[in-house]
Length: 112
Image (cartoon, rainbow, N blue to C red; front, top):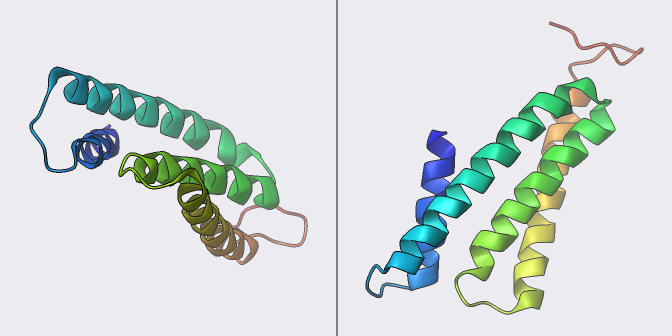
């Protein structure tokens, strides 16, 4: 839940761009925090049951979407936000796939 609050604060701060804090800005921050926390809990519950490719892919999609939305609140263009989101998702996928690949046996069972 703490990560959700940090994410919500960051989204709200990006949205207001140094201006005054408003009610809509607070609402955006709390809704973003709640959505992030719920989605993170969902991915955290589902992802370990998947094979390593889908496991890494699900976390990559989550990270890319979360970053893309947060970056779009800065006022950047849709293409720039999408490009950065894809870059974050690709690097997340590569890092997590390597991590999961090196911690499984030949049958795909996780080594504990």
